[in-house]
Length: 274
Ligand SMILES: C[S@@+](CC[C@H](N)C(=O)[O-])C[C@H]1O[C@@H](n2cnc3c(N)ncnc32)[C@H](O)[C@@H]1O
Image (tube, rainbow, N blue to C red; front, side):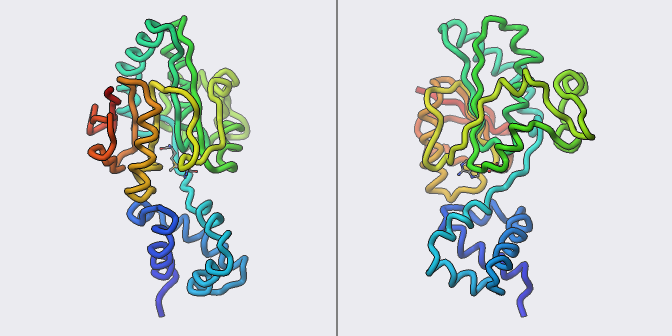
């Protein structure tokens, strides 16, 4: 008899393409999603993956529920630290100077922001560094996610020690207060980020951005055709000379995205050209 792990893998290989998602992205995190799927099968009292497969034909709304179970929430502050150094030392000061010169705000977007670790890292960088070098800068930061539960956690802005271990010690002290063993952000950092509930497949925030983070989402989990479609839309929302940052080990089909070029391959930074 096949074990539960093999059965779940077979189920994922059947279901993911129908959701426009790619199995390769889920290979390493399949335990997390299989646990949710097993719980769902149990709650429906279906007993097996094959019964669950059949369930979809009579209950097409189940696809939406399954899609929601595919959200991977792993994140941490200052993830991929070297790209944050590049942002802090070079890209953000250059973008800030340009925005001031053009008499407009510096606009940033974190797409698939999970519980806020990524946009709040940028908010910390702004408060601890950028705003002192550019006091006249109008800094705007939008963060979006399709998962309301994660957005609720982002609004609470309290994190276990493991999520903040890459925050530089002096910023950890000045940006967080410790409450019941968790690290909770000060209000000035929290208030820098506007969170929106959006599914990137059908909605993106309005306006043009200088800097977009789309890490560990589109390139990692979306099927290639859909990834190309969404990356093209994201590219249209980035100012000429602006940047897109993606995650490590996350394929970006640059050849299929018009107006995008590799800026730094090792750090997964792309630049938008006119
Ligand atoms: C692995 S986390 C990445 C978090 C952060 N960007 C990082 O790299 O640390 C992926 C996030 O994308 C969100 N997500 C998944 N599908 C989405 C979609 N279609 N639209 C918007 N967000 C989505 C998930 O809810 C999750 O919070």
